[in-house]
Length: 238
Ligand SMILES: [Zn+2]
Image (cartoon, rainbow, N blue to C red):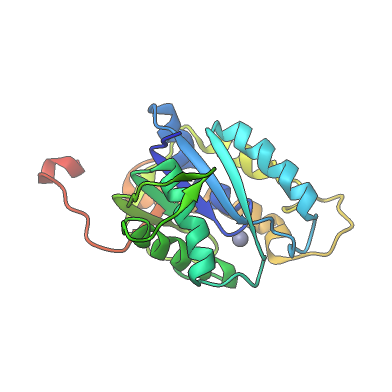
């Protein structure tokens, strides 16, 4: 199955927190999108791997993505080496996306920057024909995505561009709240963490409003790029 966009996250819920609005919008424009979670988030303060599997499925249904897979790497301890890169290369060649979305280049959780570099490196390597991979016994064709965009999650990284997600914020929040074990819950008896605060939940709305305010729309999500983006004419940016 070929997809237009493949979004990677170190943990289930990273993609939702970073770019759910953009995914919803792209799907509404007719694009096909898949999500690959690197780990099951088994080290999360609240919930468990099994609970997070169910939550990830529920969130995927809300987003309307075509596929969601989990590579079951070790939460907290996966590394950017050949074995892990090969797992990502196989996914890139399997789904052949033009666009890859991945974690923030720097963030509070150490897995985010690690996952960001791992996926970015694998996107390059996936295009090298002498790296051979197989999927279900079949030799895969080399494939390099045209571009890698990094979404922004915890830290306020300065975006290189923003996507207008006006009209998609309610469903974005619904997809995030599908992870009911992870975020603010007045009735939870589980330990607190920075992401379980009411402030964090509210920050999702005020960040998209703030990026919108700065770019002349209601709500926006920000991304960074690894190289300059070219446009055909100045009019493309109006
Ligand atoms: Zn995460």
